[in-house]
Length: 328
Image (cartoon, rainbow, N blue to C red; front, side, top):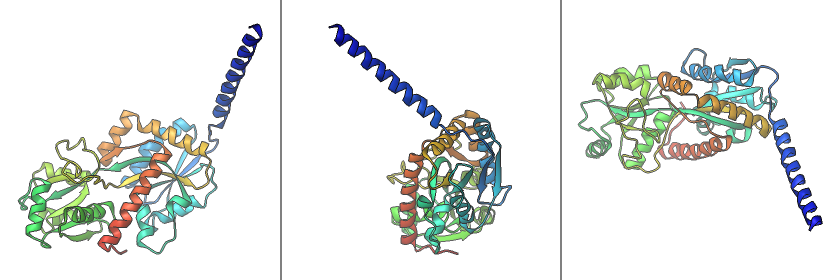
């Protein structure tokens, strides 16, 4: 009996030692940067993209205990900045902030850049709330009435959007496919060019960001029919999503997130994701992103971000091929 007890005690001691060793190894494996981290911005400085990035990186540098440098590398549908990060050392010191256009550019162009092969997704920062709005001259107050109107007037209604190949265009084309309606797509260089035509009724419908459309909705000059995102938006809580309007699995939104070079170690990726997620879960940060960028904060793990990207790439590819969208 005594020998059995001794063996049992020894086994427990060895098990405890193994747990302590594993915990120590895990602690040692947690990456701690020891020099400044460079974040690449694929747009010109001074815009909404930089505002989002700085909102996240300002507190992130405190958590990582290192300075963060933001370098703008605009152009090429975000591929110039993406290529710079993909070709950098896989050591976590070069991070790409990118948005939905990153996956669209290779589909629309002859670029051979493969986002999921050349970059490692780190974390889904968030997505912009976008919605379908119409001019009040259209006799519709919900998606069902709008679809009936479109079917009664095939090809006579146009919808505007900012940016060829943008998420706004993807949402408009998906509406056409899922609802079985015919609308004419009218691309604009930006929302500032689209708005005058929308407000005047020259283009009676549009898909655009909530920050662009809501002031005119509040003024009674436009009417929102549905949110393109997968969930309702606090700024317009009474407006249903397309899913609630009866279109299952309908979710299109301009996302943004962090990437590093492919081959970056799991410890580095997990550290960047964990610390960024902690920042995003701070109520003040979430409120700032929602107020200034109309953003829905996401966060989560690298695996969750990767899964979302795979779904978005597949859906975007189908829409582009179905609609026959071409590069400008």
